[in-house]
Image (cartoon, rainbow, N blue to C red; front, side, top):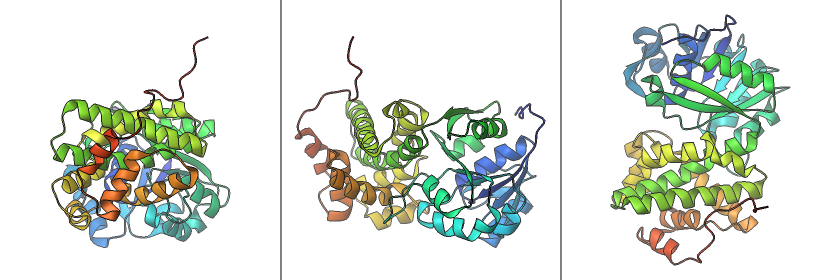
Length: 344
């Protein structure tokens, strides 16, 4: 791998020893930055420091040997210039609160694709609420961690209104297999990353049930219409959903068995219960929790979301799984492309 050409080096903390946190640590360290990876498990930290392998999440792939894993938040964050946070949305605020004494005025990048229960806050909003004077950005896109660590060519989006922040993150992470684009629509990029997890579950169900290629393409394009319709109602820019964080991430998670949410959906389509599907996965599938929040919010805002409503009825109301596509086909026929710019 060719490291970044810039001579400026940063001290970087990555909070979260899952697949994506490990991938970010590996890229940053290989680019010559000083990296501390915070994990909860002492055994996991020992494995990374001794064997340079994340035995729990990426046992078949090596991590740059200069990555130092620790279970102490202060050790990871105190001297850091940049903090990447890659932890599940359910525990995001809890961890941020614990790390607050060492986060003031730092560059903090959320990579978590989820919505906090009860508040409907996205992770960047939690950072603004909990941290003193943070410089906040969001990293999102079609970023399957196993492919990144295996050095497959990948692109992502850094979203922030802070142009200098975007340039710094582009410098830190850019290499010959990882390219970083920028976007000012923080809310849209972050919301797209959360919403697509719902539709990855739908897609996994469909594949397990043997749906054809026509059906797959219909589900993905109608998913894009549905999630962008909801996002615009929430104040996002619809054009964001035509980029990597929108349609790019949607395609990746709706078509790959590396996607955790897709795998949960596939198990559901095979007849397993949600509990059994999540047990097979062994990791958090953000889409299940996001589904609850979005279904409730869509009802409040009166946003037309038949796929969300169908999946909700299957997972939380015990409806027959075959009703999802059948119900969609019986709905009112809408226009193909929303937010179309009229001809002059």
